[in-house]
Length: 222
Image (cartoon, rainbow, N blue to C red; front, side):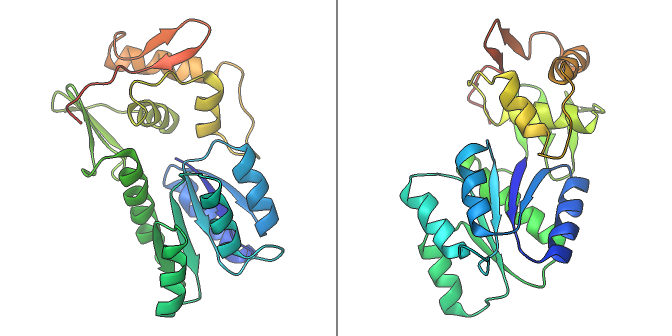
């Protein structure tokens, strides 16, 4: 999952970025509301963690703007404003969930998974596809009841393809799901991960659409 973190507290931002990366996410971090708006308008993101007390542009203003523009991005508010009125205002403006500081990293991660699941139209915490069972929380994959070991980026590519079944995903979109702003991208990285997944799961799972990208055919049993 590629996440934009909008948080002006440097200590908290550094810790949350590191923690979420260790949990398997790609994280881009901005320190003010204007930078958040710019990133939201240009980047391919899966979720936004939004502090309300941002400089240059308040978090509620950022939230209100993206919802008015029709951006259907899962938003988790992370803030020290803990009154009922604050929570109601944020949720009414379009936030999907709300966590009050101080927080537990694992709870933030669980809430992120929940709000992205809802936007994908899934209620179950695991993704079932044919004989595959992928568990994003446990970072595990079972095939016909047998555990399959995947590298972190292999897992991320497979999860992204499975959560976008039926869509043709370009190499660029897959790269953007894997790498943040401060991470270098090897020219053939996606092709290498696709190759490894096909060796482990079968060549027929991931289709190459020549000149366009990759896809996993949509089925109805998820």
